[in-house]
Image (tube, rainbow, N blue to C red; front, side):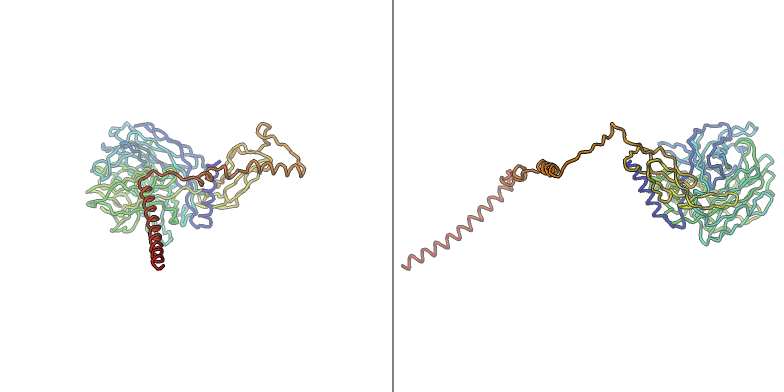
Length: 551
């Protein structure tokens, strides 16, 4: 009961704090169970989700152990390379639709150039600066999935208004007109098979040189007015390009050369940003790769975000998202790359980025081929933790329904919760409290339930007539005289003789004090009293003697 009461008070507090706030915070996602992944296991792995709609966001968490600590790396939106290079690589590539999430992991392709050194997470090897080096051949993996109604209404959205293609323009500009830098931007790419990929902010291979090489993906960045997309484009090298693909070394080959673009951007209230820190990082700059958090922070719900902002160059002030794993090590085969890699746990965020010869931000080669290039050896790197534990849906204390194809959310009054026989119900926004009517008793079930934007929580709470062994009602009738006698009897039984109390007895006796200081104080008091009496006596004697002499 105490836990339920605390939960109720907490939810009411949140409703009071965020009621009327234009920027309701993000609600906790649906989270799958952790699954153990083993080296070179079959790919892809499919994880069903219960949303029955296209998610607004999917996050793949890859949990590994380094020393005595666990760290969370993240999935990647497209496979930017195959296994033709013999150096280590790592990561998990994901796509999703309205019923499941597909995870593509490194496998033995069986080709003449197969590379079996692929792991589920990779820090980039010795060429990357970071707190430790790691390539992880086993991991625990799960997915976090948010529906549209789990987010507040976007400050900007663009649904199927643009298309990216390997044969289209070098880049696409999408003005967001918010007037400031968004805190969070999601760019989803709807592929021809109706699966969704997500744009990235890092590049791990410059171009595909030969016909059996493949490079795929879309790079995304934004500034205070604009969101820009650079697709992998044909026209350079002789390999295969796509806006999304998986190829040899990742499972069955899948390639998409165009996609429809869906964009949402938010500016959150300051209370929704639990942590933010920015440092200038790069070649020749000494700064710790480990950022302690004032947590611990909830890794089940909160969003951990790392971004790199260009300081100069053609895309100065554009913000690029960091990667959750190093897809390559930046060796000669990959030519020029640009990336910041991050991993996190409840108490810290760790960062890795290339040393000399490569970049934190790179646009060039196949990425926006024909567009101005960017090579940043230093960048402003920001680490954020965004709160995602709201109890209210995107509509606040209203029912929420969504249409992902139009990125539309509609709000309507919350339906009434189920009635429980012999119980009162108190509805406060998205919270209902059940209490039993007079004469009925609770079974101890959950009496506080919440509306999640789709339906009310279920509960086993009920109220029944108390059993005879629990409570036996009785009626006693007294006349007035008898009632007075009972009152006098009760008062007599409750009365206490003050002379029988220990406090009264202590007031009549002196407490013994054996301390020397107490004795010294007593002696000093006796001396003072004696001296005073002696002086008075001497004065009287002098007067007496004078009177005798006068006779």
